[in-house]
Image (cartoon, rainbow, N blue to C red; front, side, top):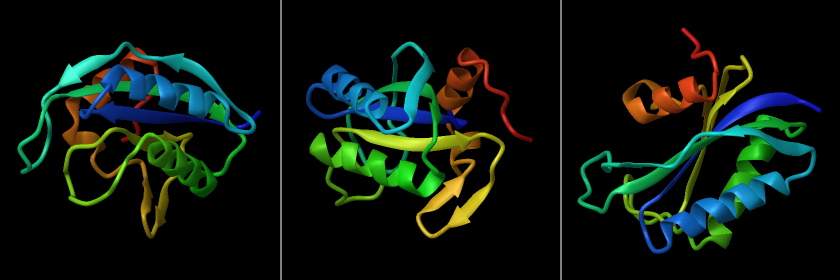
Length: 138
């Protein structure tokens, strides 16, 4: 089908479980894409300078025929359908969908860096990658 990508999901506003479920359904419906494995859902403290409620986080391992940029565009559309607005950096959100890894590729484009530049700063992502049995790049 394509390459494997690790996609992190997070939500800390409204129906957090519902938004994660909507993200999973949206991702599974993407052309040439299937969910291979998913982690359990974990509640974590927010990261960053903005006071906000705890997040629910989950990571998916998908196999996709979409290239990184079209995959990102599709994830942003899923976020928007779930009411995501980008008003404050590090702010609360209904849904966040991040490409953490995309096979062994390294991508450095405006608005898209893979591996995700915050990977080393998010211990829950490292745990989730281990749960998915995905090797973390050096």
